[in-house]
Length: 137
Image (cartoon, rainbow, N blue to C red; front, side, top):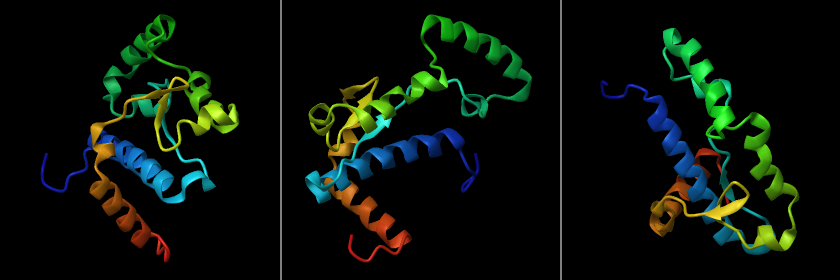
């Protein structure tokens, strides 16, 4: 692809990494004053799932998705929301133990190792604060 051309999946991966970095940095900056976590809902059968599929393949992918749902390799939107709901209303002590952490399937998971990069988290925080004109980052 040409320079400056949008690459959907690359942008998606970068946005997910940014969310994980921001959750960790916010947790470190604000401590117990608020709960900050990141999560992966799993591969969920939504329109986003088909967004990067060429239109001539969509009927095949829709049929394949039904098989993947039956095999448990693809989640329904309800199943995809379970971790977010768990974190929002779960037992406080269990969820608080995962402050700043990455969750999937209602459990703590190992995120991208880049989350440990404190200068990267700080840079993202500062850039984000500048974009939204946050005066006291």
